[in-house]
Image (tube, rainbow, N blue to C red; front, side):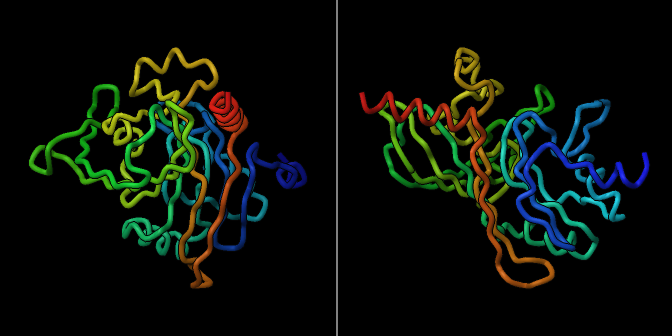
Length: 238
């Protein structure tokens, strides 16, 4: 591949923001964040590296979101930015807000969920345990009801911690599974309007590693999520 061809490559997803230190994308549903062993499935990091090759830059992973969750991810473009961002994520200081469509309407319009989660090898799932003595890690999630539609609701969710599948497992444990989450709720295989969990990383904010000031970004909902939301809104009005 010559330089001209490399320069023309654009990844098949929106780049929300880019400068010399960071690049932020709106990851689509179904795309892996990074490569996984023994898989040739496409992933965001490799696509960004192809996009950045012409400028002799690389995308360095900072955090991840699930393959079938859409939304904002930030990648670093140099070691200094990477180190700074990783420290922020380890300290749980970035603002990470998700939107989720769930079954049922929480009794409290806003609240906090606390559970201890343990990742199991079988099915690569998180399970809830009693505490650290059972190998659990503390997961804290805050939620707020944005809209309710009789027997479903749109929640705004903010992460305090960031464990794998945290939001999905905690909401299910609270009696409000995410619509379309077939991995944790077998009954969701019957959902026809969406074939993945209706979960979107909507807002992301952090201290810019070079500028030293707080920056914040938002990402549009994917089409199937938006279509389902509109359907729930119209049904609730009848």
